Image (cartoon, rainbow, N blue to C red; front, side, top):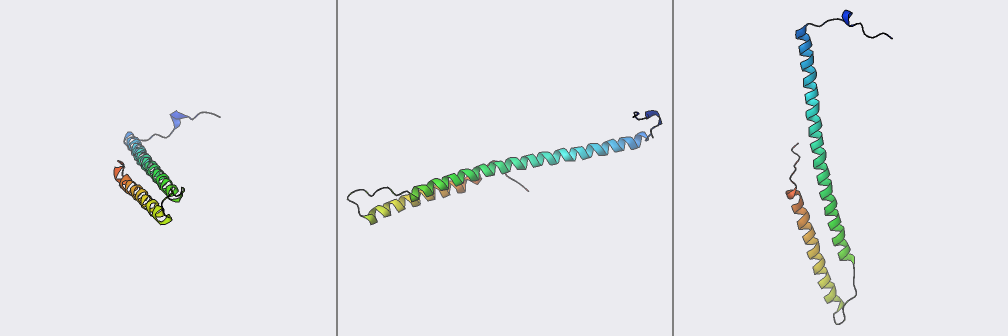
Length: 113
């Protein structure tokens, strides 16, 4: 194979060549901007996914606390003990809900699209 024969290659006028180069540069710049925006959106998505994972862990922990049933202490009726445990479980779940509701407000990144 022979290399391109540059002396005989078609020549573009400098004005057209400059316009072609500027067009390519503009297209490349647009692609770079799009890639940066996509990377930012991925970072926001990862942050939100991490927050959701933490919230789910808190919910599972609270649910486990609700479903664990230790032995009733001597001297208390089943109703007294169940009521006390239910009150504690409600407080635990309320705390988790409050924490999870505040989590999106703490996130510094926000998707504006």
